[in-house]
Amino acid sequence: MSGTSTRPGLMRGIGIGRGTAVGPVLRMPDPVPDPSDRPSALAPAEEQARATEALVATAAQLRERGQAAGGTAAEVLDALAMMAEDPALAADVQHRTEDGATAEFAIHAAMTTFRELLAGMGGYLGERAGDLDDVARRAIARLQGLPAPGIPESATPFVLVARDLAPADTATLDLDRVLALITTDGGPTSHTAILAREKGITAIVGASDAAGLVDGDLVLVDAENGAVELEPAQERIDLARQRTATLQAIRAASTGPGRLADGRAVPLLANIGSPESAREAAARGAEGVGLFRTEVLFLGAEKAPSVDEQAATYRDVFAQFPDQKVVVRVLDAGADKPLAFLTDQGEENPALGRRGLRALAAHEEVLRDQLTALATAAASSEAHVQVMAPMVSTAAEAQYFRDLAHELGIAVAGVMVEVPSCAIMADHVAANADFMSIGTNDLTQYVFAADRLLGTVSAFQDPWHPAVLRLIEQVGRAGAEHDVPVGICGEAAADPRLAVVLVGLGATSLSMSSTSIADVRAELALRTFAEATELAALALGADSAESARAAVADRIATWPPPVL
Ligand code: PEP
Ligand code: MG
Picture 1: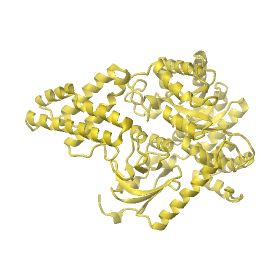
Picture 2: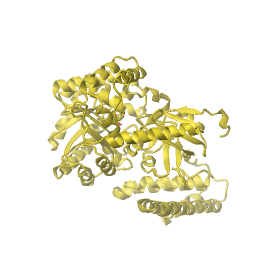
Picture 3: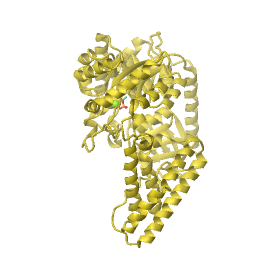
Picture 4: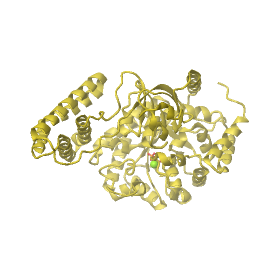
């Protein structure tokens, strides 16, 4: 791509977090397409030589990367290199080239066979099956003269620009190198965005104009304003740095449990997806966990994990929160988080398909195993463990889940309210749940019929919209009437001003990526409950997300500014 002058100087997207960053762009290469099975025009010996060279070079590259990275990454990459050098694989590739396949297709087909073999073995080897795809794609990219897939390498820090990132890529981003992340696709609640928030990466998602950025472009990434500036002036850079410093001062001044200015407690809990993020959340002062996304642990697994395997991981997480609440969500498989052992293949609209509790009820043995593992781990821990079910759409489902959880030894069982029918029937749902936790990400997606992963409709994915707030208010009211706590665990809780509005709508606790806790704590401390209620009424009465935001900002501007 060329012609900087024709590209916009200012690109807009949805900012994640409040950070800013300045640096040169590096683009993530596009995925390598699967090779076709057309017969080779070359002699088998030539194809064989191409395949051998590609596999040997891929192994060498992986080792080199591993040595440069050190630690666990070195072990992981060395294991991948050994896969590329496997003699049985080489023999299979040779056999296929002798039969007339291209080197690309021979590697692709041989790796696929091996992957299925490994997956069938289950356990640790089964979990590594997906790694073979990575090795195959690297070798095929080399054969086709394409850049190696995955995060690009650079000795100097850079701003990563990608269409979207796989969860594994986001999770392994090297924060010393990646200054910020820009995706052209994806919405604010895509899992890329959630992981970015969890890791505290300055990110802009759904910035479709950023598709025109090329390697080496200097950009200013301003997450708070959802803006990417191309070739920014020095004073813009200075201003951004000043803002970052002010923000850091506000965060440093905010400590202790979450409470409003009048002393009313609003526990600030963390959204986590692994024992590692649990440790980070505890270190950042989370008062417990409001959403433990257990499916994240098993995204690559081909088979359902055993009870013992699960219990060990849950114990590790619970140990971080003695005497505190840990709300575990049972596996939320489907749509953007398919699990091979739970998700139906080939649904045309997986977000509307058999996902969440629907998939678990269809495979009740998986749900029973998970609840048993959780009860076992909870029994030997000091955490106050509660469970909740994702994608509940009726009061009958809430009752089914609570009965099963109680039967298997878990005393507190609630539901996520993220399907509009569940919010609309909240009074009946509340009668069948020990607590409710509103998932604003899916709730917004379903209220607007706008795929949360799709950049082209990401403008709809705005929880400030009164259409969403009215449902939240209804759930808050039902919770108060039935004396059932109402938490918020969608990304909306991480937006400091919206967090105040949510408390005014009846939320009794807020759960978010732990990197957002300090900002939310600081904002809550400025407002009384009466003020939160007033702001909530203003937002509810607006006719759009923009006017709800503006009404709240205008009212806050009439109150005295915070004293730092
Ligand atoms: C939600 O939908 O708001 C939620 C918290 O769950 P997830 O983002 O994992 O779907
Ligand atoms: Mg959800």
